[in-house]
Length: 420
Figure 1 (cartoon, helix red, strand yellow):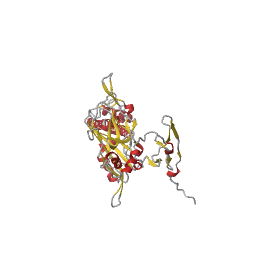
Figure 2: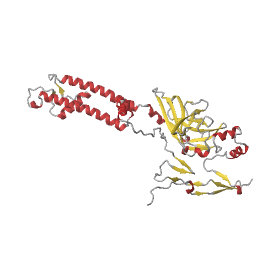
Figure 3: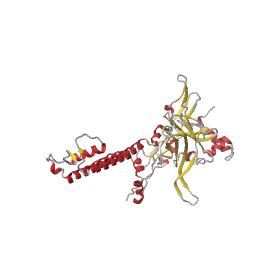
């Protein structure tokens, strides 16, 4: 009997193509790095996040989307725990999606209109108004109300205080005054709660994050003799966040000394903005840097490990909205597929002589430039730039020779064609 199991693709099954370029200026034939075709996993779509490129699995399912929403689902919550949502009903209404909020808003008002329409109809029915419709001497509870549709219209007129003048209550009917008082009081209370809930939902500070920008990728380069991971952030509003700060969270697998596996283990990542530590003033787009030193969770990771997609980096930007004083938080996520090794972000600031102002060109927000960077870990990078001598002189020289940019086309000189 044939097995239904599918064999996962292996690195050896990938096909490579090698091309050569001749440089007429130097007379040296340059060999392009072999291009490896992307291999998709069985049962996955083209947009799937489980792919392999150059032997490294890319696109690990992230915890946080690029837009900041969490990708975490909850199961096993018992009914008694779910009651907490109703006890905190106001916050629950604020958190629900807009389509449900609009539906609840409309249905709540319609239910109250309908409920009091029934009360007005029962009051008129018990008073005998429908039995004396043709009696001109009869004084009904509601003048000219002859059907339930009239009662519904009168209920909406009373609660909204429209008062078309067609229907109106008669004070000779004993229950009309208390019923009008109760309906108007409940109507005011209902409008205050629902309209307030809609206004709070519209003005939530989380929507401020849509005018905060994070770069699509993160760069790894050498900055002041240290291997750094860099990300660009910006604010397109002119009313900037007050007391803004940024920090990162490294999420990866950890196995304790006792053998217990934490599939999503968090570690703190310190980011600095120029010389201001984690504080920033977003008048213009800034590049935030994380030094891959002894305190970094990336310190011992080799180049191949960096691209093996075993971790996720979550960036959190917090600040106070200047106009409202509310705290805003913007989040995004990066993984191995977002790394651009040997690159740094292009300068997008220049001075406009015509206007006499500094100008930020957001068209260059995600643009990067090549920067010579060794393909090694932060620990080995310290050997190259600080000369700690941990790995010996020979390995340090080999790593130094790799300190070229790996941006765009990776060119390598073939030994047989190399000449001076």
